[in-house]
Length: 62
Image (cartoon, rainbow, N blue to C red; front, top):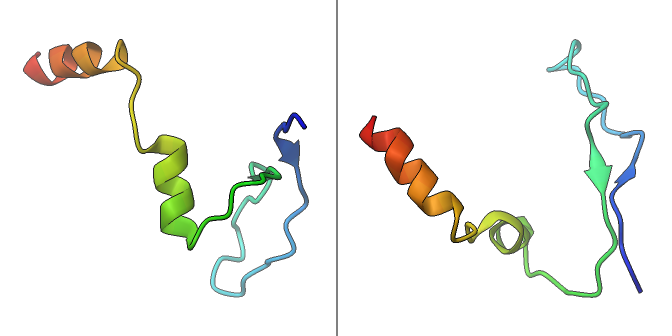
């Protein structure tokens, strides 16, 4: 099964954030079970591609 990001209409309006723009909210279906959101985030963005590390090193050096 192939997954793809799907735009969703969030159902989480907040009185604390009346001007929040939720139009960039996305969800995907996955067969992988995560213990919590931190585990999911680390799986998604936890590792950087090999070519990006030298570019970040260069940026930081400059």
